[in-house]
Length: 329
Image 1 (tube, one colour):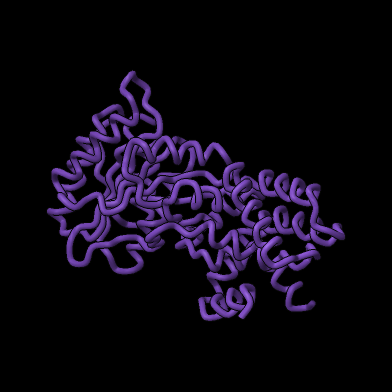
Image 2: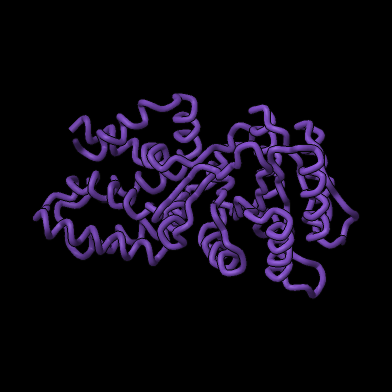
């Protein structure tokens, strides 16, 4: 069975509403990336060095990243030689399948790791402006609607308005928010959040953290301190350390992923605003270069537009035009 056919059949077994969210959310990237690739394949009569150079430019422009692009094109060259391919049109499913393979993370698990019948602690990290607090609010909404008891800890004590923003989400969703005064020690807030979650028999504690400090304390050292406090109070926690990245920032998101990955043990990526960019190729770059699974993606403004990442849904939405064209051929 062809790669495109397997992809279509797999997605057909999933929720139509979720499929539509991925289709809509990735439309800009699909039009940009796949539209350009289709034009290249249709406009070239042969596979030569100019063809490869133009493909590299298309992939890099879509924020697939230089390193990932070079590896991808090299693997495509190998397949062309191995299968003795002459017609660029024959490369459509091969390129798509190679991208899927490069997104594989060893031992990947895109599901959130939630504890059964005991407290789950999820720590959110990332720079200011990427959507950490909004992501926490949307995730709290989801967990609350699933019948779970949720507590929020306002650990971003340095950004003006961060505490108020989280408290607004708490009121909107109907969950408790543990907070201190602005400028307080973030680790102390998280400690109090853990104690409150335990005493209230909460299922999940969602912890916000600072993205930038307004004093001379090193942000990464501050995060390590928060991590140590959680580990002391909940020995197997935090159960998730989710790095929130803004998809619209492209390669800056990849740089941030590397910086935070060096400071704390990041277990998963949240990519916000994926619907707002034509450069969603950053998902491919992060998956391949960081070897960290993307766990959640923001595909719109509504609370339920924060979706669990599904690689097959992602690839189907990205390459739907190719899939349709392949079936027509």
